[in-house]
Image (cartoon, rainbow, N blue to C red; front, side):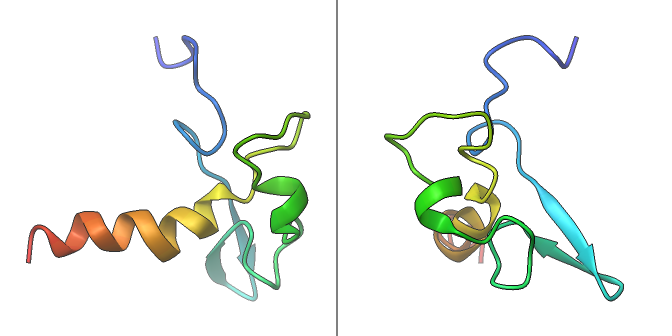
Length: 70
């Protein structure tokens, strides 16, 4: 039920990593996939493209969404 397409990284799915007991958005400087040019590229392709979108979404998109409810 939850695995129906499109389920694309950065649109429907976001990646996180635990570092020293703290949950970080993938794309943060300390995470494994922190190269935003490679792992966050809306026009790019590749198996890992979109893996770092969680960091971008946290920095931009989610702040805008939350501000609408304050």
